[in-house]
Length: 304
Image (cartoon, rainbow, N blue to C red; front, top):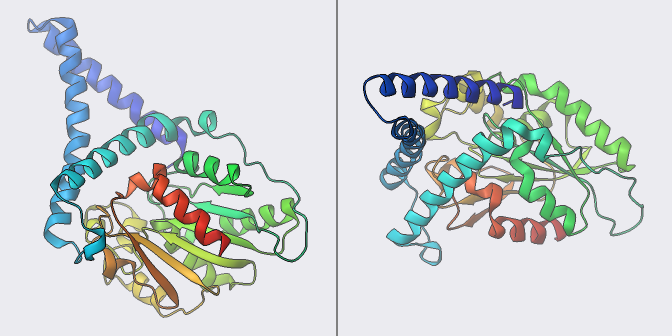
């Protein structure tokens, strides 16, 4: 979602909250108590969103391999991880994406055997390039040239993102001098990538890595709004038609968390013909944005 849209949403929320606090103050509440009550309500509603996703996870989750199982404390940790990521991404970072995310540091890359390719990161549903604040920094620290791209408008048809993505891919290749890049998509970003492959082929993309992408749809998408939300419903015509396309770069990889609270059921939703399926554990859906485990895994597979 564009930073401007998120700022408007936050401003509206703050205006309504101030009006409610003022009304409570008029009924005899202490001013500070009224403000705390409104703040608690705002945080509580967000906590309910996270809690609801974990209720579905407990009821409809794929079987967890023995080596990736966590106990009740592990689930609590992930729920708190998701809640913290939700606040950081949608209240702090993404509304002010330009403040936190300066332009990508693209530079010409030397050519030759074994030379690294540029990496282009695509975010997921209702997010923007600010999602990659942490991971971009970590990948760049490891020597990778990393580009990002915002998929706008937030609730549009996935197919409508493809022209701008084409321009961004061409910009990255022109700025780096590379003939191919590596495309990494989180959540819906993985579906956008596949739609782009179907339309344009794989000549410009050497590798494709998806993170927590609902390749077969997700049960949680049934409450998503917008055309792109509908396109992530399990069994919807657009997703079934996309599955008929076999266009994927060589050695494509679908990384998923067996504890993903948004892509459910995790293994079945993440399966993708023509791509290796790699499970990880102990990471929530939005928590992937800040996960050291995801960072280390990305660095490892990028070097493969």
